[in-house]
Image (cartoon, rainbow, N blue to C red; front, top):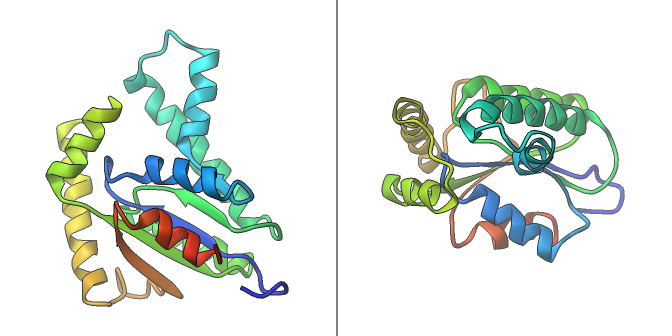
Length: 183
């Protein structure tokens, strides 16, 4: 990345429990100058405002607000690279991310954390963030299709052209992200 090149917008994706939040915590610790759009920040704010609200009721609110904030941050030009936390399993969400990055003339990079289903489920349990069975099954089914395209180095869906995609592991995700931003 040269001083005059626009900073990238990086989608950090993976099924629930893949390790996105833990990856971002470590990235923030090692490169605090990066901008991060993470539902965890919104969740913490909501927890302070409404500590009585159960996670299952607050989750849709958190994710809606986090998504809107991420979209605004993407279109805002200038500044350091932005990392956006999202499962990345929904085609519409990835396409919207790409369109906004293009509109803001910033390169879009997709970083997808690849884990086994059991590892993802254990990750959810460890953090006490259990995604309901049918919802996780949908994420997992979409992930398997997406993953097969990523492994084959194909577009995730027809016309979904990413300037750069990285398929990583939970153990490599932090180092891969930092390498993308020149650290």
